[in-house]
Amino acid sequence: MLTFETSQLQGARDIVEKLSSLPFQKVAHRISTLDAQPASPNGDILVMVTGELLIDEEQNAQRYSQVFHLIPEGSSYYVFNDIFRLNYS
Image 1 (tube, rainbow, N blue to C red):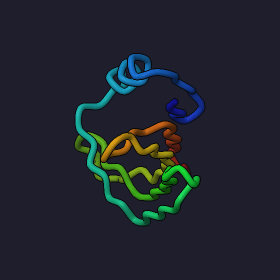
Image 2 (cartoon, rainbow, N blue to C red; image 1 turned 30 degrees about the vertical axis):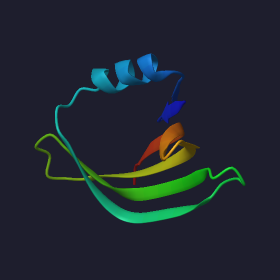
Image 3 (tube, rainbow, N blue to C red; image 1 turned 135 degrees about the vertical axis):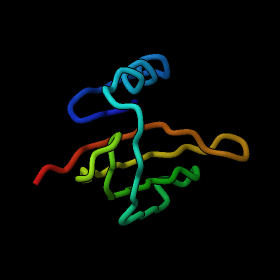
């Protein structure tokens, strides 16, 4: 599941459709903080990221927060939940 601002999307097809519909072509990330911790005895990991996005050719960065819930699968992980929020100030 992806929560993008206030929209909740379930399943890979809906998530890809939403991300593809966003009105910009280029996004650069500047990560300010990254925190991770175990989320269950099964090896899940909870990750929180804060930072700035530079969208297309904009000079003013947008602050954002993002939380990922990662689930182990074999020798890698997949994103089970992803919460993204722009931080307006």
